[in-house]
Each structure stands twice: as C-alpha cells, then as structure tokens.
Image 1 (tube, rainbow, N blue to C red):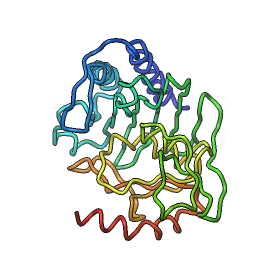
Image 2 (cartoon, one colour):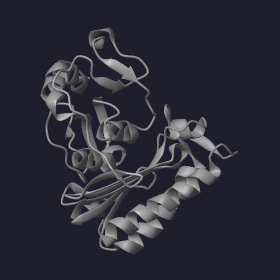
Image 3 (spheres, helix red, strand yellow):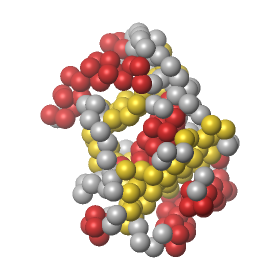
Length: 258
C-alpha cells in the first residue's frame, strides 16, 4: 500500500473500534425519515472520521451520509466519500452486517477504498492499480460464464430469478459488493436510486478484485455528482455481467419511471 492508503486504512480501523465499543449497548436511535434509521454512534463515528481524514488531506472535499452536504465539494479534485456505519439497521439490531466505509475519490473515481467490519473480523482495503485485500490477503472475484446458478446475497429471490442461488445477506450493501470481490457471491444488484457513500469504497474493492461494476443499466459509475446519487449498482463476476444487465434492464427502466 501507499503511505496514504495505509493511513486511511488505519483511520477506518480506529473508527471501526469506536463503533464496536458501542455495539450492543444502550444508545439513542431514531429515523431520519420513515425506513431510514440512524443512531448517535453514526454521528460519533462521522465526527471522528471527518476530523481525522480532513487533517490527512485538507484539500479534499467531504461527502458523508451523516453530514449536511455542501456544493463546495464539487469544486474539489479529491473528495472523501464516507458512510460512518453502512448497514445501520444491522448495527442497531445487534447483527454483524455493518461496516465503516471510507473512499477517497479523485476526479470522479475512487482511488482508495476501505471497509472495516469489526463485528465480522474483516478489514477490506483497495487502492487503484494495487489490488484488493481482506485482512491482508489478496482477494479475487470468482469465475463464472453462466448466469443461472449465480450466488446472490438475498433474503429471498423473486420467482423470475429462481434459477439463481440466495446466500447470506448482510444489511450493508458495501459488504454485499465485497462478497463478490472475495469470491463469496457472484452478483449484487440494486434497482433504485442510491447514495454514493453506500458504494464508493466497495466499488473500488470490487474493481481491484477483477469484478465488473456498473450502474443498474450497465453504464459506468462515477462519483462526486451534484445529487450524490447513482441509479442502482450491479457488481458481478465478469463473465455474467452482460447477461445480468440484460435480464434486469426492463425492471430497471420501470423503476426509473416510477
């Protein structure tokens, strides 16, 4: 790793320890809007990350789920894109499917991505051009050429996708994408508008593992957009990516029109 990458990984791990120290304890929690939980630990971890990361790269902008957004970031070449606890629902419920997610985005593309998931004893790191690792070991996406039989992190698959295989699904979409990077799943797809902070770090981890990534319609993903949103995400082993886009296209187009 580069010196900067190592420092970002260390800060994310420290943030993970902070979150872990409060996990399964009594803390305040509420809903920002119906169906969108948040807790006081989200805010504590967000504050810690902002202090540490902005000190590390003061020239960078800031985009985080738990910080009021500012258009000032749009004029910056580099931007920190952060979700202090991705998978807050699992965190609040005492489940393990959550992670601290940190990405450094440069000119629209993640160049450093870190997921720290201490409840799962997992620390994921990727740098552009340097590969992806989990707990220090290099990871690689699986090989598959046929969509049928592909492993998908899901609680339940729709009947139309009954030829796919459901595997354990963490609440954190970043961790689901990381499962593709590690060869533990073959396909992750979201067919709705989502926030950049949910996926920026994991997208780099997937790319550096050899996985294919795009939005829900198969178009390239870029980050630090004015709305900080992307229409879905599709991460898969390379051999089935085109087939997955084709299968999901009509559903994706219908979702956009709603």
